[in-house]
Length: 155
Image (cartoon, rainbow, N blue to C red):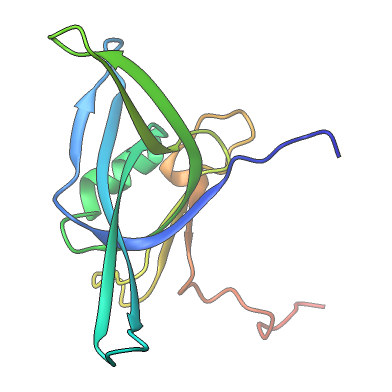
């Protein structure tokens, strides 16, 4: 196989309220800080240990930015699917800096609110448009919907 895959899947808690910003051309983007934790029991001491990893998530998909802006806040548990990107910039002192982020843009991005209290279940938001642009209406799927295989078929 000659192709490659750049896909990141995380489940974690939002560490602070998302930051909504605008690009120079007026499009909104959302910055999220997501914490994932690993817990284990130390074999030698029996002590419980925990390590938290912090992830920078940048949401460019218009529909997902609207979801973040309206529903996501500090403490929200999220499932996300995106791509890993590293960007480089020069700070005010002339020093080159690097930042690695999980980017949600295009048709393959997913953001699911796992502990959504508003709906009592999971809300899945994806930017599922083959053109690469996203909208809330075309990408919204509520897993609590009544669509199921048990529904009566009208024939």
